[in-house]
Length: 120
Image (cartoon, rainbow, N blue to C red; front, side):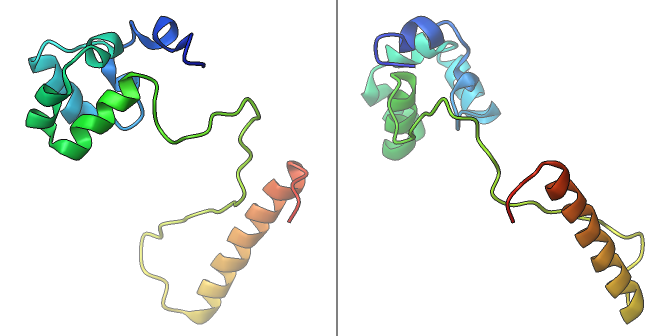
């Protein structure tokens, strides 16, 4: 997205299409008659800061206008870490059971990393 294509691409989308605009903010904006990104971008900053405060009000206005400090890249995101989590029905108290669980998790993680040809 560029400054020239932002509103054409995002303007008709609902406000919750913006990162950081969740259900509560969407509901408040909706009560104000603001339902799309274009509506939000056209809203007076004084009104937004009176409802959401000076930080959040200005931040969501900046987002609606295509601003922000995130760098957008066309390169696919590659996770730099891998993990697995297991919740046991009962706490493990036996040391050998804990060791076995850790080894199992490590093996599963290693298998995924190898299958995906990831560098470790």
